[in-house]
Image (cartoon, rainbow, N blue to C red; front, side, top):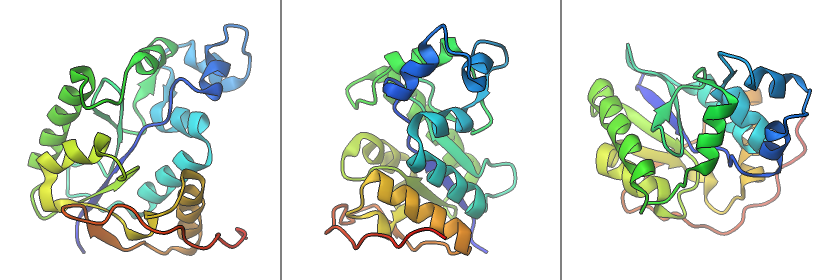
Length: 204
């Protein structure tokens, strides 16, 4: 069986859902947990902030990751701390730092930690391990950096082309339900855009 790990794009940390947890009067469980150490696992937090799309990415990656020994199967991109595991604890102060960060190729605070951690992962995983990006490939904000490190090992789901975030999230959750893994294609020289596919059938 081929080894495969997943890198997930981050949730937006400055949107409406983030404002709910930044509200000091918020009393729902996740908001209260963020104010206490050790905080909230990153995967759980980003699933709340992003909703369907991130939940789909995380569930799919956890279902189908097949990492080499000693290598995490799922890693999440952050705005200024490189790659982190879904279990990485996040406090309210750390979330505020993420919200102040910028996913921008011109921002060294984003690029340097991501490149550092990607190189560590590449060295540990080896060149035969597939690295699947679950995130936007239409722009270079993730792809341009990760390709420099992973080269031909970097792949993405072919069925992502042409889909919006909600459609991708729904597709991934349906794949988990069915135990069906998507086809992956290399990102080097790949066509990153596509026509919009038909709407997904309602999830059972």
